[in-house]
Amino acid sequence: MTWWAFTFPVGTCVTGAAALSARTGTAAPAWAAAGLYAFLVAAWAAAGTLTLRGLAGGALPAAPPEPPPATGRTR
Image (cartoon, rainbow, N blue to C red; front, side, top):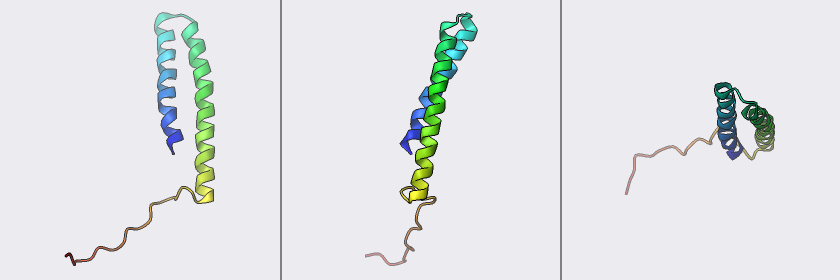
């Protein structure tokens, strides 16, 4: 699941580079944003694939197990 945490900062860099390009009117940040976006799509694909593989294989449970029932006794 940590793969998904990696996609957030990359997406932030894509947004920042695109905004910088729009604000300054230069092409270099636009090219950087396009390259970072392609990398972001690849990261999404990898994270999604690994998540589905983990769910199918049982390594990632779909829901946490039920906790044991609580008892009224304490010592």
